Length: 85
Image (cartoon, rainbow, N blue to C red; front, side, top):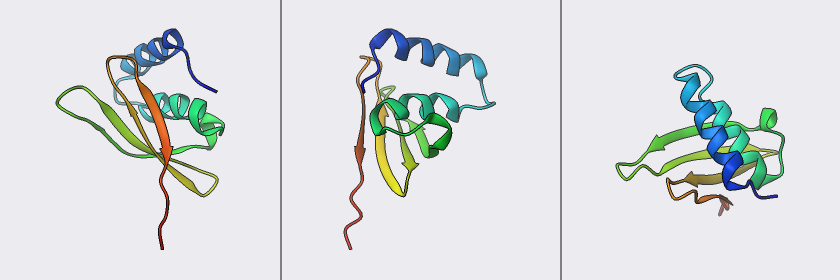
């Protein structure tokens, strides 16, 4: 399931309105559309924003980790991180 651009923009504005409280909710919502987990079941770590405005984070659910990113061009993606042993 992919999140359409309008929904993503709405989620971005909701996140901006929350300020410092509950900031991971945006990342949970966006990630849920890419990793097939409910937003409430996703743990978020390592959120960062690069100088070019790209946001990135790690989403974890069901024992799997995903590297996710969002940029101002409305490009969003999450890819499973393989745990090479």
